[in-house]
Image (cartoon, rainbow, N blue to C red; front, side):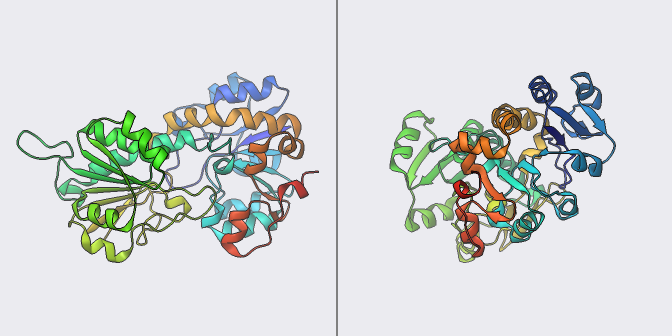
Length: 370
């Protein structure tokens, strides 16, 4: 199979879909690999490293897309990439379809085979999402701390406090991978941390393993509003796999919050946890509504691109090789996790939450991969 890796085009998206280590593995398995010139520079990977392990360097995105049986990316295709998608081509990347009807329809019209990192599922685990959730979770507390500075529009509060002055209060909505990593980082900074979730088993676990300055609590409307009043930083980390994120914080809730408090919406690529959120970029990461700073960058891990690229490839390579070695149909027959990752197949939606989001017809993957 011909595997191609284009340079990412999203604003300040410095990750790349393949590392040289992954390229070597695909080539060792008998596949040809093509990488767009300069595609790895944002992750400090020069073209020479790809060429040294056997990749062919192509001069343009058009060449890369035209050559490929399978495209390996990081982020969803953007409008300028839609015309480059080819019928029957496998796209293996993050898609976030349920938050983007235009992208969904474009992929259906181009009749690609869309395998989404975010919905590949092993039991209750999302193994291809986990490494980026770790990065985004840890980063969310760092960004919250940074934008809490008065010079960045925040309250002017040092998160860890100093002698005689209390630390910041951090509220985290959701106790999954993002929330857990956000809590560990915020706790490490010395902040007072509260995590809200509805999973009692998860809350019990976190109560056993988290440091003393982290309090896991059951999430309901009263506890949410009570802690919004005292929070200096709020991290939105609620995920429903493949579906739109629920709106946990409404516009009227902002009036409960302290002026200069910071909202960090890690779920923004799935529509966001906060009603007032809209996607931002690393170039213009924040906006202010009702005196509350909103940080809603849709590709947070792109800021720490080298770490993120290698962490992502550690997770995605195994399933990528399965797709390349067997073809998408057989691979999805063989692997239930990959079957769950199949979101669109040659013009039909094969992941129910995406179909439900836009009132589209849902076709079970088993019906198309025989």
